[in-house]
Length: 288
Image 1 (cartoon, rainbow, N blue to C red):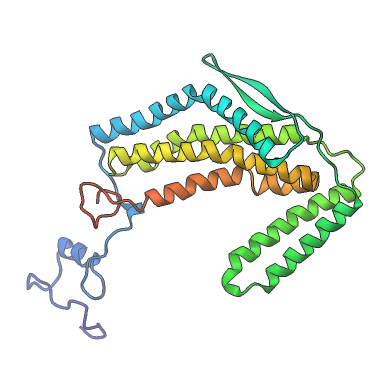
Image 2: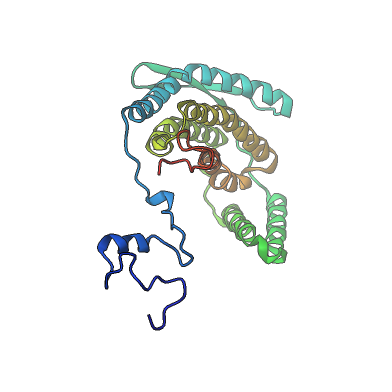
C-alpha cells in the first residue's frame, strides 16, 4: 500500500481483497508495533455480582450506622483530648461542652473553647504583613520545578492579605468567635466522616477488591479522621491564641475542612493501587 508504514498490515489475514468488520475491529485495538491497546480502567465496565452488591451495601449502610452509633463515645473522647491537650499546650482557656441532637435519638457532646478571641493590634498586623511579604518573595525565588508550591504560597499570601486589610481598614468589629471556629471545624469533620462510607460505597467498593480490604480502608479513614480532626482544631486554637484572629481566615479556609478532604483523597489514592483478588498479582484493581 503506497505511503503505509511497515507496521501497517496491507494484506487482509483472510486473503480477500478487503477486511471484514471483525478484522477491522481487531486491527483498531492494536498499536503501531502490533501490541494490544488496553482500555483505560476509567472506561472499563464492571459486571455486578450478587456478592459485590451485598458487600457494597453492607459496607456503605453498615459503616454509616456504626459511625452514628459511635458518636456519643467519639464526643467524650474528643472532650478528654481537648482537656489533656490544653494542659499540655499550656492554654489558659476553659473547655466546655455543647450538646448536639440528631434524628433517631442520637445525642452527643462536642468540646468548645470558651474564651475571647484575641484581636490584633498594629504591631501584630505589621508582623503579619512582613511575614506575608517574605512568603510572597519566596514564591518567586523557588525553582520552576516547585511551581505548584509557588502558587500555593501565593494563595496563602492572598488570603492573609485580605485578613490584614480587614483588621487595618474595616471599622466593623470582627464577627467570628474562636468558639464558633472550633465548633464549625469539628462539625465539618463529623460530616466528612459520615460521608466516608457512602462515598466509598459509590466509588471504591464497586471494584473487584477483597472484602476485608474494603472494610480495612473504611476503618482506617474513619480512625485517622477521628484523631486528626480534633488535633488539627487544637493546633488552630493554639495559633489563634498566640497569633490573634488575623490568622483565623487562613486556618479556616486552607487548613480546615480542606485537610479533612485531603485525608480521604490520600487513603483513596493508596487503595486504588491495590491489586484485584481474582485477576492475579499483575491485574489492576478492576475486573477487566
